Length: 103
Image (cartoon, rainbow, N blue to C red; front, side):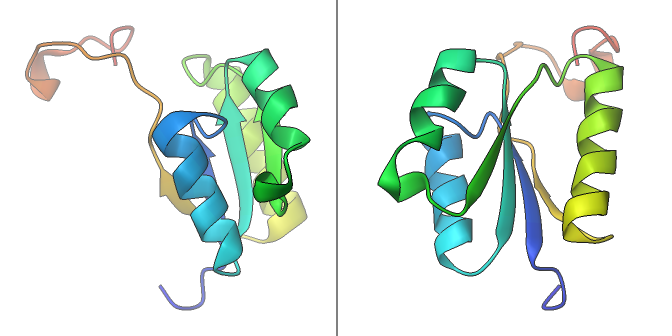
């Protein structure tokens, strides 16, 4: 994985996702952080500690958004990217029992 220097972090504008995104950026990754919370995206975009992170407002439960983000990252940052699936709403179910919608 040493040749991968780009990353996508879902839920990346707040909480644990923000820490992951900013840590990756501080370590030389070109980071795209996707978050559904527009206010968090705008706030973090203007914070000095978030320098080096590109924020994208979007809902990753929408397939078209996921496709669009992936295409944008490939175009702007190259073909390979580390993916951190941080965004989540807890469902107390075994993963294999989740429907596509719940996933």
